[in-house]
Image 1 (cartoon, rainbow, N blue to C red):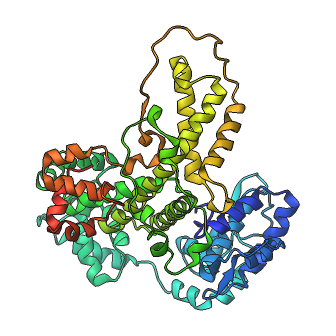
Image 2: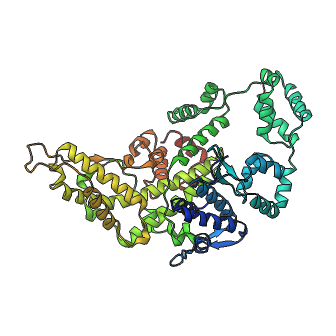
Image 3: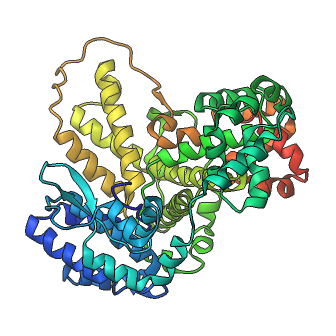
Length: 523
């Protein structure tokens, strides 16, 4: 069983982390408040965030955050917070019930108990006398949960385990497919249609039976490396039919493996979001993405000469800067929320929507970085004591790399509610950072050397979004065909903001299949 259910709101996740770092007496008090508050929550009610903080900590937030949290999400997150906070404490096990004891008391499986945690069944981390840690449930809290969820537990307990007779019938049914070329997965799907049992349950029973395993083939699932190889082959123009013969899989099975590979890449991204009051509006996304500066963002910059960046040419007005930051965060929030909702094998449309939002958010951040970088380099010059082009190559590289990294960090985490401009925050942050670095002093007299005229960099190297950014250039795409060039520019942001695949047929006046064929080799 996991340490805690996954948080559904960032507010409760951050609050739980704060409490977990508090002194022990504060943890004990606020853990008790959480346990009491949990059984007062109603699923369908909205709770102001400042009220939630007050009920848990006893403190009132200054000003109103204008954020309401749904009761059902709060129930899940309060249970998660209880587990996270108790994990940072040393609570004696005492008479707390074990997982198996709770499952027996409710007449359900341990897996069902894990599902019930999301619905308000709290567990705390406790320590046994032998110093082993486990999850424990207080008897009184189990009583309260069973009283509040009486119908839910009764419904869950009615699902009985398969009897030996039912298992035997499934095996006999499967054996009847001998020599018909069907796999265990295909036979399990046939049994599922009439049996009313879960597909995974049936598959497990058939795979464990030696007789079935001998007469029905069971293909090993495609590995991540298989998926990466298939993805690479598709980009190189290999057809699905050829790959189906190579891997002995259907096209849908291979597409599913690629979808899971893309899902895993998205889940590994750390998507930072600053919650803004505007997000509470029903049409927040439409409003925040409507300004021209947002929709007509700059195309991806694959290479930039930092010596040629002019601060006056890249500066943004306060209004445009605020619009870009707000749009960047609403796109990230939309992507992050959608990633959390992804199923085991997501659809192409779901993945494309998330990836497009993240590409768009990156292009907006890129505009902020173009504003911040000249300021960062100017501060670096002051600390270097001379023009960067007069520095030895190693020192030049140090200052440029540090300025680039700081710029990316500042522009990806800026809070628009701080009332500070990108230029001012960058100046202060970079100055403080270089002041804390004990760098060697540059020689007072420069030795004779060629003065560099170019220092080429790619913003891609500074970004975790590089897995989503095109490695091809517009010229590469156009060299394939005019259609490939147009699809590439619309898809990746050379014609305004990046577009979703579903938008391209109408924009380019061609069929969906033609777009799909073009995208196969564009990356």
